[in-house]
Image (cartoon, rainbow, N blue to C red; front, side, top):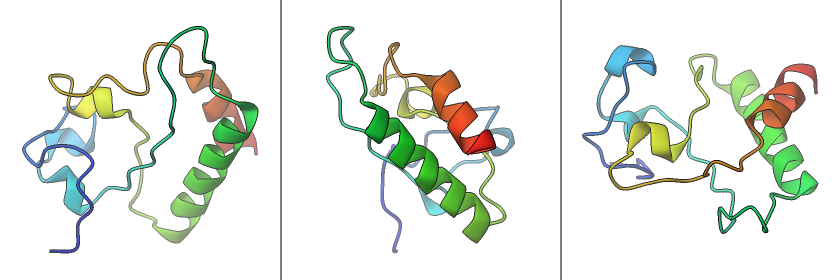
Length: 97
């Protein structure tokens, strides 16, 4: 009853909790606003803030494991954060930050 819906509840992906459904009930959604165009890069502070949120969430919630995009969970409806999202930079900041 207290889930924040960031994808449709019937969405899942085999790489995320072995395809478990009802992902909104056990996940955390982080919205990073951007137009998803090459001429609108994600800012350094957006990626740094996102990494800080992920690190905090991982420290607080031991069962929170996966970091995935809306597009991975709900590709029929969502495309964000898009092809220009700096996943490797986020990964480095999360793991080394």
